[in-house]
Image (tube, rainbow, N blue to C red; front, top):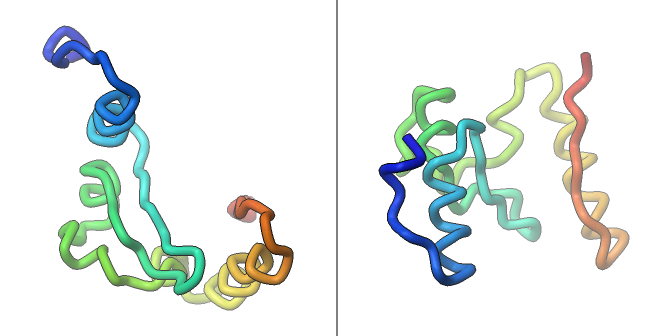
Length: 92
Protein backbone atom coordinates (compact mmCIF):
# COMPACT_ATOMS: atom_id res chain seq x y z
CA UNK A 1 0.00 0.00 0.00
CA UNK A 2 1.35 3.42 -0.93
CA UNK A 3 0.82 4.88 2.56
CA UNK A 4 3.30 2.30 3.89
CA UNK A 5 6.13 3.85 1.89
CA UNK A 6 8.69 5.99 3.68
CA UNK A 7 9.08 9.63 2.60
CA UNK A 8 11.23 10.13 -0.47
CA UNK A 9 13.60 13.05 -0.59
CA UNK A 10 16.34 11.91 -2.93
CA UNK A 11 16.36 10.47 -6.48
CA UNK A 12 18.29 7.31 -5.55
CA UNK A 13 15.73 6.42 -2.88
CA UNK A 14 12.89 7.07 -5.32
CA UNK A 15 14.53 4.69 -7.81
CA UNK A 16 14.97 2.02 -5.12
CA UNK A 17 11.34 2.29 -4.07
CA UNK A 18 10.05 2.20 -7.65
CA UNK A 19 12.11 -0.97 -8.22
CA UNK A 20 11.00 -2.71 -5.03
CA UNK A 21 7.32 -1.71 -5.13
CA UNK A 22 6.68 -2.02 -8.87
CA UNK A 23 3.75 -4.19 -9.89
CA UNK A 24 5.73 -5.19 -12.98
CA UNK A 25 8.58 -7.67 -13.21
CA UNK A 26 11.87 -5.84 -13.72
CA UNK A 27 15.34 -7.15 -14.38
CA UNK A 28 18.59 -5.28 -14.89
CA UNK A 29 20.87 -6.75 -17.52
CA UNK A 30 24.55 -6.12 -18.22
CA UNK A 31 24.39 -5.17 -21.89
CA UNK A 32 27.98 -6.30 -22.50
CA UNK A 33 27.42 -9.85 -21.23
CA UNK A 34 23.66 -10.39 -21.44
CA UNK A 35 23.64 -11.53 -17.82
CA UNK A 36 21.05 -10.46 -15.27
CA UNK A 37 22.56 -8.32 -12.53
CA UNK A 38 19.42 -7.67 -10.50
CA UNK A 39 15.71 -8.47 -10.32
CA UNK A 40 12.79 -7.10 -8.38
CA UNK A 41 10.41 -9.15 -6.20
CA UNK A 42 7.80 -9.42 -8.97
CA UNK A 43 10.36 -10.94 -11.36
CA UNK A 44 11.24 -13.45 -8.66
CA UNK A 45 7.57 -14.38 -8.18
CA UNK A 46 6.87 -14.52 -11.93
CA UNK A 47 9.81 -16.77 -12.79
CA UNK A 48 9.66 -18.99 -9.73
CA UNK A 49 13.41 -18.54 -9.35
CA UNK A 50 15.09 -16.88 -6.40
CA UNK A 51 16.84 -13.54 -6.85
CA UNK A 52 20.12 -15.38 -6.33
CA UNK A 53 19.22 -17.83 -9.11
CA UNK A 54 18.25 -15.03 -11.49
CA UNK A 55 21.42 -13.00 -10.96
CA UNK A 56 24.00 -14.32 -13.40
CA UNK A 57 21.38 -15.95 -15.66
CA UNK A 58 21.52 -15.17 -19.37
CA UNK A 59 18.65 -12.87 -20.39
CA UNK A 60 17.71 -15.32 -23.14
CA UNK A 61 16.77 -17.91 -20.51
CA UNK A 62 13.76 -15.77 -19.54
CA UNK A 63 12.23 -16.47 -22.94
CA UNK A 64 10.75 -19.64 -24.44
CA UNK A 65 13.36 -21.83 -26.08
CA UNK A 66 11.96 -21.15 -29.57
CA UNK A 67 12.59 -17.38 -29.12
CA UNK A 68 16.04 -17.44 -27.54
CA UNK A 69 17.99 -17.10 -30.79
CA UNK A 70 15.96 -14.04 -31.81
CA UNK A 71 16.36 -12.49 -28.36
CA UNK A 72 20.14 -13.07 -28.49
CA UNK A 73 20.38 -11.39 -31.90
CA UNK A 74 18.23 -8.44 -30.83
CA UNK A 75 20.15 -8.06 -27.60
CA UNK A 76 23.49 -7.76 -29.43
CA UNK A 77 22.30 -5.01 -31.81
CA UNK A 78 23.07 -2.11 -29.41
CA UNK A 79 26.61 -3.42 -29.04
CA UNK A 80 27.01 -3.07 -32.78
CA UNK A 81 25.40 0.38 -32.90
CA UNK A 82 27.19 2.10 -30.00
CA UNK A 83 25.02 4.42 -27.98
CA UNK A 84 21.75 2.82 -29.01
CA UNK A 85 19.27 1.54 -26.45
CA UNK A 86 17.76 -1.92 -26.31
CA UNK A 87 14.07 -2.64 -26.54
CA UNK A 88 12.71 -6.10 -27.29
CA UNK A 89 9.04 -6.40 -28.16
CA UNK A 90 7.69 -9.83 -27.44
CA UNK A 91 6.05 -11.36 -30.55
CA UNK A 92 2.28 -11.63 -30.26
